[in-house]
Structures are given as C-alpha cells and as structure tokens.
Image 1 (tube, rainbow, N blue to C red):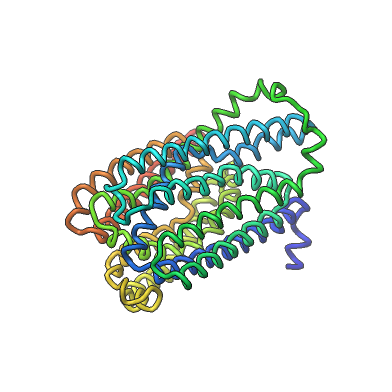
Image 2: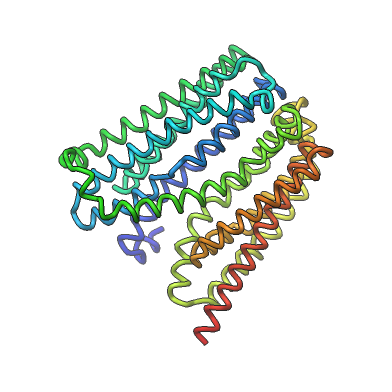
Length: 442
C-alpha cells in the first residue's frame, strides 16, 4: 500500500479511494439482496413466491422501457458545466432532469395499471393483487428520481455518502421484509404492503440526504431558467435515449425470461426458476468489481495503441480464471440438490435442474468478464444494440420451441444458449474491429 501511495498520482489515489466505497457498497448490497431472496422464498412458499417474482419482472420490464437512466447523462453534462463554472446551467439541467423523470414515472405507473388490468389472468394466479401491482409500480418508479440524486452525488465526488445511503436503504428493506414474512408468513398482501412502504421511505431518504448534502451547490443558482441550456438539450436528449435503449435491451435479456416463462409455464415453475437463477448468479459478485476496473484500463491500452499487450493481458487473466472456474462448476453441479435444499429448503429441490444451467452461464460470464468492457472500449455501441436485438429474437424463438415441454429447466437452457450467442457475437465483433485497426496501423 505504501508503494502504491508513492507511485500513484493524486487523481489516481482519489479514484481508488472513491472506488473502495463503491466496491464495499456493492458487496454489502449483494449480500443483503441474497439474504432477502432466501427470506422471501422460504417465507412465501413456491407458489406465492412465483407470483411475487412475476410482479417484479412484469413491473420492472415495463418501467425499464421508460427509464431514461438520466443520472449517467447528468454526470457527463454536469461535469462540463462544472468545468465552465456554470452552476446556473447545472441547476437548470437538474430541474429538466427532475421534470422528465417525474413525467416518465407517472406514465410508467399508468401503463402498468392498464396492462395489468387487461392481462392479469395471463400472468397472475393470486386474486386481488391489482392495486398492489399499481402501488409497487408507483414505489418502484421513485428510482427514476433516485438516479438523479445518486448521479449528482457522484458528480460532486460524494461516493461515500452515496454508498452509505445505498446501504441504509438495503438494511431498511431487509428488516421490513424479514418482519413481514416472520409475523405474516405466506401473506402476499402484507408482504407487498411492507415492500411498497419501504420503497417509498427509501426514496425519501435517498433524495432528502442528497439535497441536504448538495444544497450549498444548487440553491444559489435555484432561480436559473431552463432556457440557459436550450442549445444543449438536443444533444442531451440524444445521449439519454441512446444510453437508455442499450440498458433497456440488456435488462430485457436479463429479466424478460421470467415474464416469458410465465407465458409458457405455471407460477410454481417461475418460483423454481427465480431462486435457481438468484443462487447461481450470486457468483458474479466476484467478477463485477473487475468489470468496473478493467474498462478504463482497456480504454487506456487502446488509446496508446498497445494491442499486443492488451491481447496478452486478456489471454493471461482468462487462463488464470479458467481452471478454478471449472473446478467450481463441477462441484456446484455435483452438489446442486444439496445446496438448494440447505439454502432454500426441500420445497425448492426441483430448482436444482435449472440451477445447473445457470451455474454454467454464471461461470462462463465470470471467465469472460472483460468482453462487454472490451466492446464498449472499442466504441461498438451500434453493433452492441444489433447483437441485443438478434439475441432477444433468438431467445423468443427458442423459448417457444423448448419451454413448453421442459418448463423452468428449458427456460434456463434458453438463457444459457442466448448468453453463449451473445458472447460469441461480441467476440467476433471485437476481434474484427481489432484486426481492422491493427491493419491500418501496419
């Protein structure tokens, strides 16, 4: 640590100090999320848990299509305004972001209400959940505004406060869910009431603390008008929409499987599928920090045209991770029923079949954790969207052919095949772009 402290410049030391809070917060949040999944699955039972999983996926997919993910754009343009000392423009941009996010939040709740009314019997077996679905959508839509608060905190290097807020929110949600499930087991109405109230409370805490922390920067320019940023609005809108579409398609691949499974199978199968996926994909918490760390390093190597060094690095880290990953894979598959029974209970033993496919996918994603950062570093944004469109269509077709007969196990197989196709296409695109660049240089 002393060596790094002496050799790193001030900006790098700031980066590592800020990142340490982000990494700790991520691990803390992931651990509590995993604990919540065990509490919920055991407390609600397979059928009720399946209904809950469908509600979360149903609302999440609809709201993701309308989620502008505006916090990322706010950081990008806010940094420009800060460098120009135009805090009046930053405040105007924040106001525009809040208006846009609130509008999309209202629209998303209305769409969820309409769709749930006309398709309720298709997705849900538990009667009387219509208003809970709408309430859950309203509570979940607060994340639109939370994105702005977190973006502003990161923009002002308030990483510690942002991480602390996230951990507080996770603790509150976990305690509320544990209390609801312990005192009212298998009662989905009480459970949803606790979840909805918790989401509202967490949203209030997140935004109130962010406002209190940043009021000295924002309030002096509170009277600034949005006409100040009118020349930048078009570019801002294009950036927001492009980034939002990419994130939406990624979410559609990672979460749309549950809604698609419910079309072809029962809610019990959704329950088995959800716990198996949650358990297997928990291994990705080990590689997520690496994904965040390797992106700037790949970008630097590409900018310096050190292509042989980059290829050597990727081969090296892949060769290091492949053997322990294979050993973990064999052990997890061999002990899948034992693991599922210990963690979630004997009621969920049928989920072990799906768990095996998810473990293969999770291990594959861990070994190739550098693939998406490489695609982003190479600037293959449009190509990335095209790959997502292809894999989504492939997933729908495969689901139609496989899931009706194999149920949850079939959906897990489809997701594995889609992820393999996704990685293969990403690899081909990246390799082609690399060879093109290298040929021009030579």
